[in-house]
Length: 416
Image 1 (spheres, rainbow, N blue to C red):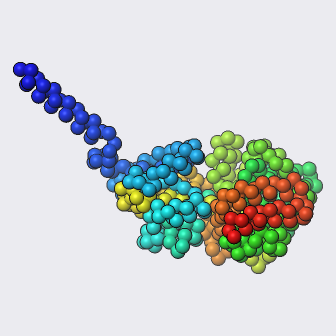
Image 2: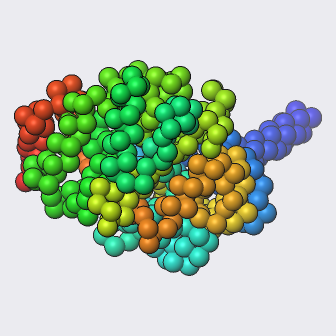
């Protein structure tokens, strides 16, 4: 009898163990096989995609699950430690520039060049965006979303002083002068990392080709043409066109402390929720005009790439998800919630998003450039941000020369 009881107990234990294994998320169950996780440091993405997820499932047969890790350092460490193993994520969000380059150098990313050619471009993803995700002639990323930058302005303040969106750069300067004459600070300059914004915007306005040379390392920070851009910025600073460094640029704009700020379209939902601003009625946006009427103005963009872990056991499912992600219906659902999209064919409800997206995709009349922050090594970015604040504090040609020489000296050390 004791022997029979022992057999029964062993059998029950074995069943329990097998049951636990089946529920333990090992990837062997049919349920687990139909779920693809996307690792991200962007905690709001699961909400942005809430309307898109059922459509992705319908089109791909797979559930997409967002797994956020909002802490930047913890996220970066976790991803880097897993990428060389079979536990590598099938999909994860990352950053363009040197951080993406390092992953490619270590052969940790799946090549998506053919996916772009066969699926993404055909579904309406702007071909220009691929340039920021291309390394050594191959495309290694796909856009989570695309955020465009432009000049927000307070329509009530503009109306009070009979101001309209500028058609030329001279018009823009006249707007600044009119505001100054009436005791209004024209432009909020921002804080912390935002010091690069106006040098970038002005170079896009003065010489978009020079911007490419500069960010590709073909033109030095000490190049006389680059200096000319910073001299223009320092002159505008000295004239009082910009505010002091702020703790909350958005709040100062929203409360009318400043009339304009240069920033990105992902602020729009916050303007609506926190301040009750209606796009196109209370606030609007324009692209900074070119200083030369014969040149195209420049729209700067940010892109958070989705990457595919080359060593992931689920990478084929991840690739399948991405084929669905750029479907018109999926992107429309994403845009309806977030106000952003990765394709040009969606109907954006927000008039500001709609306008600047149309401009960004109008390559005949506008340049489209990846913003400064993603273009250089982190050491150069961090140093340059500090040096640009020195220029903001002392807007003189002497300080411009000193700051640009310091940045170039560091650039030379890193790239001898």
